[in-house]
Image 1 (tube, rainbow, N blue to C red):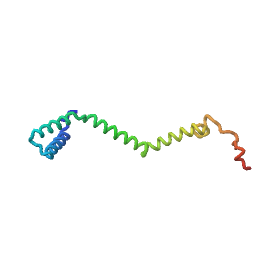
Image 2: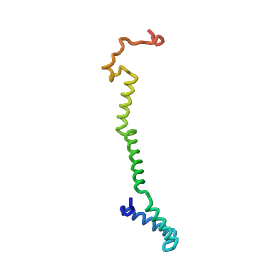
Image 3: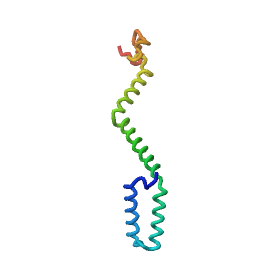
Image 4: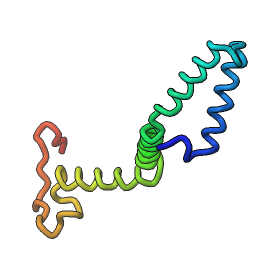
Length: 115
């Protein structure tokens, strides 16, 4: 991205550059010109596209996590997990009734039979 294409950012960066030179008391001096060139080079070399992409990815990741951890996506994930676990560990659960019939009698362990 060429900084010339983003006038507002360019204006802000120019303002920062002038503030630095003013703060150091170097405006109009040889040192001021060196600082000015260094700042200009740093501005023109900066990877604005890469930074915008990284920030966008961070925000996307955060929003996706919020949706599935704290938003409506959480209920969908929980329901899917519950259905999967019920199918895997409870073959007579309503999801599998068409494929399995429950046993005719309940088996009770002799240690638990208190009749």
